[in-house]
Length: 448
Image (tube, rainbow, N blue to C red; front, side, top):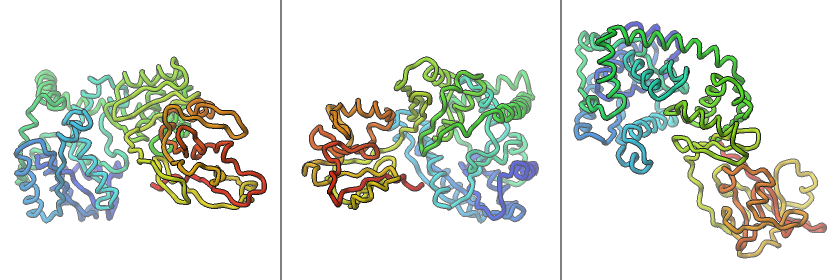
């Protein structure tokens, strides 16, 4: 287990002074990781806390939580206990309980990170977990990136100090240090994909090839080196990143699959998707880029949409709630999905020197029953300078991406639109010469 310290130093997993939260289920792996880091906290100059999450799946979960808290008290380790309703999450999102538990677990971790409770999350994955992960990735149709398995650090937050350690070394450490742990009976349920790989596939492989786990891990290291070289040939700066949206040039999909697949994975990771994307999904994206016409869109797992917008593919994480919008026109600020709309009184002399994307309009010309809302079927708009069009057609003419059209606030009375926030004002509310005051509309991006 001492090789953990060398691994931490080699991959710079931990910095002096950090608070490391250890994900502790109560099983042998996580209990040993907690014990090891706590024993070496002075050497590493860190503080160690335990994070236990009850996933709300099994009856014995409450007993396991009490066990973890008791052992933490014995070790003098501060512990945090959380409960999530995985079956409810699975039902609401129409995903498996296994996936729901993972989403809920990482949601807790991210909350602790965002609130500065901990600096890093240490996970107890080891050599056997790595081998299982690689096989699962291969079975799902991964490329080289998937075949390299889990990284020592992910998102600069999640660290895996025990990746170089075998299961036997963990068991020996537990025995030598009299570490108590609980057996999770659900680990024997082969209806879960990982349990099937662990308890059926890997057992059969190890009967024939006893050194398979070590061999698979060595294979992953070699693949990782090759993967890093290929990535060095990519121009990540060509990806246009804006919050939960990433744009990627379609031209990449005419290059080698080793390049466009990695660029696609990078685009997805930038919008928060790092798992369960398979080769078939990458080929769906390529087909969209190469063979489909502008405006077409496909759906990927985890609420991701990919749309073709002229020479770019736009990847969007659509798991964003659209704020309700039904408000009269007045001087104020109000939130929308992509920022804050600001409406202020202004002198018309500001129009001439307007160098921002501000819109100016005459509020006195707006019907008193007009309200801010989102677009609706049948909306029409009189262009600045004259000429009435359907709002949908006008937005197409302005090359407003399909993914944004339902999120843009419009000021409308009935089906007549007078202002399209951030885009244009109608001829009917133009500021006439001689007017001295008007309304100024700007949109500011929300701060992260």
